[in-house]
Length: 115
Length: 111
Image 1 (spheres, each protein chain N blue to C red):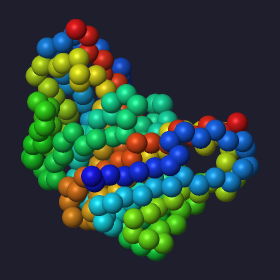
Image 2 (image 1 turned 90 degrees about the vertical axis):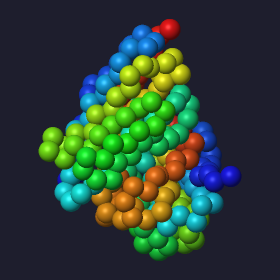
Image 3 (image 1 turned 180 degrees about the vertical axis):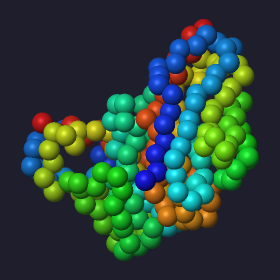
Image 4 (image 1 turned 60 degrees about the vertical axis):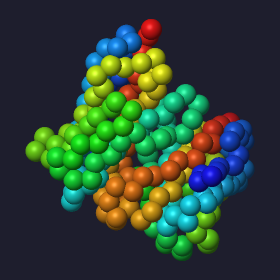
């Protein structure tokens, strides 16, 4: 089954404790991306990757890191989480967006709470 | 930069009512436009899309037409059902790969 998986689905942590949210897709997609969803703000793009070893900042990259060492995986790293990073996070993948109209497939989301 | 503006919600309708959710955009170049739907507790799913001016996307009774002259992509459905209750997001993407979403519109349909 074609899918994007994220782990963990729920995470409660404390300020400053480094964490990683994993994302994996099995569709051989070139493009992967991370978003955060906050009430009244919709989804905002954190980072995206057009292919392996190529990543770029989205709209809200501060406080986050990503890496794309393999095509299927795109982990999101919070080196020193703060309470304002409490949010619902989604990973997504698609074929290269330059080929117009390609759908983004979203993972089920990771609800992160930083106390 | 690119931006997407959706009508303020929440929207509450009775079953079989007509639905319109407005969406306008600002973008450089020639974006593709999307409507995504998010059911409670789930991730986003593509509802419909349009890749060039005057294209009409349609799915599950929903429709939206890419209007370049008014930079709009309004979502419509002739007769909503309780099962359509969800959050709807308008979005655009350019060839550069950056996806921009609107703030989302909560739709609640009552029997």
